[in-house]
Image 1: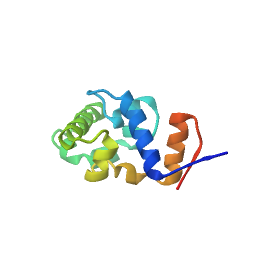
Image 2 (image 1 turned 180 degrees about the horizontal axis):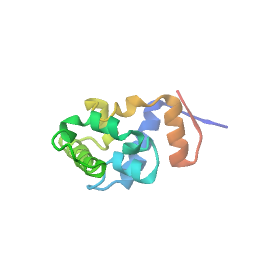
Image 3 (image 1 turned 180 degrees about the vertical axis):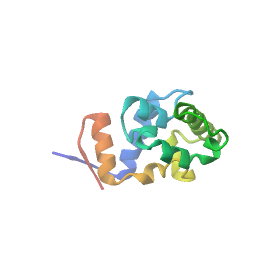
Image 4 (image 1 turned 30 degrees about the vertical axis):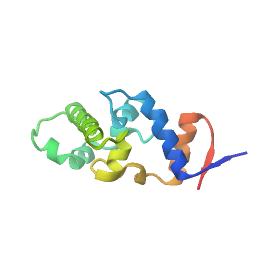
Length: 126
């Protein structure tokens, strides 16, 4: 039998689970990219897309490597979390919409897949 949960419950469970895996040096975007989980973080964007989303960082140095850009964006995400008092980058991006739209980027079906990946449990999100 499939468990039924609300969207808010799914987000809170994912936020807490992934938040426990993060440290003060790693944003959710970096963690997701490094571990190929959740939305895949920085890896979900081509070089061009990532530079376009963070052109205000990338334009400062035209020869900036992707690794350097990701490192700077990771630090920026962590700083925004600290300033806003929000737990993970998904919460920051839901407000700021720089890299993505945070939790608003994901349909209930996508959240169900992320939930199953994280908890090895299929859920129906309504």
